[in-house]
Amino acid sequence: MDRNQATGLFLISALLLVYLFFFSPKKEAEQTKTQATTTAAAPTAAVPTPALAPEARLDSAAGPVRSIEVKNPELTLTFSTQGGHVAAVRLNGYKTFFGKPLNLFDAQSARYNTKLRTLDGKTVDFGTLNFQAGGPTPTADGGQQLTFTAPVGGGTVTQTYTLPKSGFEVKYNLKLSGVAVAQEPLTFSFVDNVRQTEQDLKQNRNHTTINHYLASDDPGSLAEASEKPEEMKITAPVKWAADKHDFFIAGFIADSQPFTSGTFNSDVNLNDSTFIKTLSTTLTLPVADVTSAAGGQYRFFFGPNQFNLLKSTAPNFDRNVYLGFGPFRWVNRFLIIPVFNFLEQYISNYGVIILILVVLIKLVTWPLTYKTYESQARMKVLKPELDEIKAKHPDDQVKTQQETMKLYNQFGVSPLSGCVPTLLTLPILFAMFQFFPNAIELRQQPFLWATDLSTFDSPIHLPFTLPYLGSHISLFTVLMTISTLFMTYQSNQMNTAAMQGPMKFYSYLMPLVFFFVLNSFAAGLTWYYLVSNVVTLGQQALTRSFVNDTKIRAQLEANKVKNKDKKPGGFQARLAEAMKTAQERDAQGKKKG
Image 1 (tube, rainbow, N blue to C red):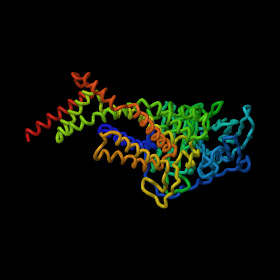
Image 2 (cartoon, rainbow, N blue to C red):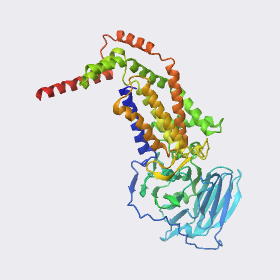
Image 3 (cartoon, rainbow, N blue to C red):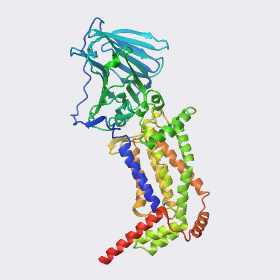
Image 4 (tube, rainbow, N blue to C red):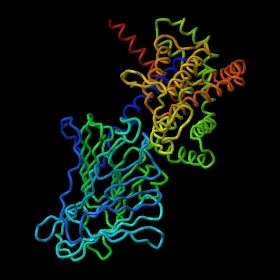
């Protein structure tokens, strides 16, 4: 590995570190450009998040307040006649990392509510109304329907919920009949004190946020990793809003008319061991929609944050699965996820799926890997000439670079040919940093000593906590680091143009830095890179068997004859001109001195 390649490797590593710290998890909200404003409020005192205050109760002819349970194979929903709303949601097919039933929320942690204003200026709070319950009754397609009615403002409020035979969606119809309602939007609110469900509390908190999608095809979200109160006000029509709990979603979707506006808040109390983050959503519902003959048509989604499932739920609802930005999202969406889903159909062990995924990617990118290795071989063969140039101009760096570039031109060698193929594989490299921590398919999937590939493996627990490392050691990360150090050593030793001085030191330092960075990342990710390193070593051994130094030297000598009268062009010409200008400027400076 020569100096140019070493510089490229160092820059790539630096870019990767920057990407990790600034984009994983995303620390800045995907801001809505023109319709939204976001502010960070002043930090509040670190006190435990208070439990939700009991709703004011207004018993009526409907009788005492009742809880009604409705379920299908995926969901168990508990409704309350007080407010006529969903009071609790359990995801039947999932458990927390700690083995407990997974309640997306319950009456102690979350609350839905709706308010409207009548013509006489009074505010009607659904939470103070005890609705008359009707059902549940079976629907024609095998689902269940539950209706809540209450007299309001000289008319009737009717809320109808339809749970399908299977699935995670709940249809919701809100209709005002004969209600003397003011011509201003109703307000629908949801306060959600999120509980820890995953092993890594910090990741669980940092992946929890509120996402939304405007009717104008513009997505947005609150900052995920912020430890300060966040607020976003939307004055444009909103198609849907969703509380994202790392791997699970509580979403509200408008099917007939969009919500006219929305306000989203999040707050974090780092000293609260019960609730990791508090999310608050307020959406305004157009009066014309809920007073129409059909009523306002909406849907709730209570389920896993799974890309293929969300993709068919609502427009851009799959953006709740964060797959990176720009080209990295495209790589995940159109390459990694389809291949991953294909392998899922035939293989049940996700550790094996990751291994095969690595092999497939390495096969596809092998031409680029071969180009990189071939470039290293050329530089190795040119080592005597390069050493001669350095010895000829020991104190003239500019002259050394000029002669080096001239040599490259004579032999038809590009100093960037070893870096460019590696740079072309970066989109896949960065895409993986978003895919594995956000793939619910890996959640609670064991492999070897790891009990859950979606979080760090921790066979080694420390009796203390180290900065940037935590109180555990990930064995997959240790093995990945060892394999990376071995690759670095082999790369430096395989040719006599190995790096010297600081660059050689950095080549060994970067894997150690990544050990601290990746120790708390998903075990699926570090297993992926461990396998990737092993396969790369195999590729290098195979490539060396048919990349012969003698043949390379013969090819370079042929290039030298062919390029005898050829002048530098393109990048090399511009670089040579820049060096010449710098040398002339330096000479003029010495004359004046």
